[in-house]
Length: 141
Image 1 (cartoon, rainbow, N blue to C red):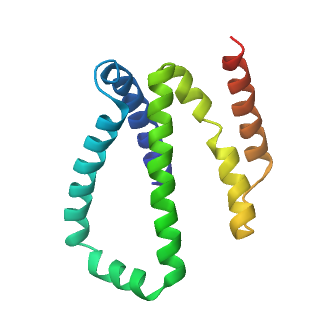
Image 2 (image 1 turned 90 degrees about the horizontal axis):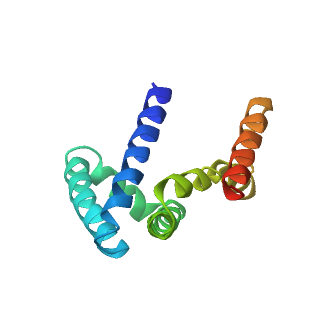
């Protein structure tokens, strides 16, 4: 099922980038992000309230390491969203989306640096190399 979810995420991110590019011709990056996060925040707060919110808040209040990791992750997501939307506005959705595809390489790097976990195998190396090659091709076109 994870593969279906990953493909659906890719499809939705592609649709998101295409629509965002059009929207950003008319409204600011900050307004778009504020609206996305406000509505998303409310939606997921309601879903969480009826599922895991109490348990998760207890865990966050008793496990300081998880609390700090969660806070850092929230800051990173906010910054990443700002930078990709700014990139779409500054260039276009296609190029910004392709360049952003190098993020798996940083995932590998940070997973190793932060958690000493290694998920690299031959397929990952080949796929990562093709991603880098694609970014280089698009950057010099």
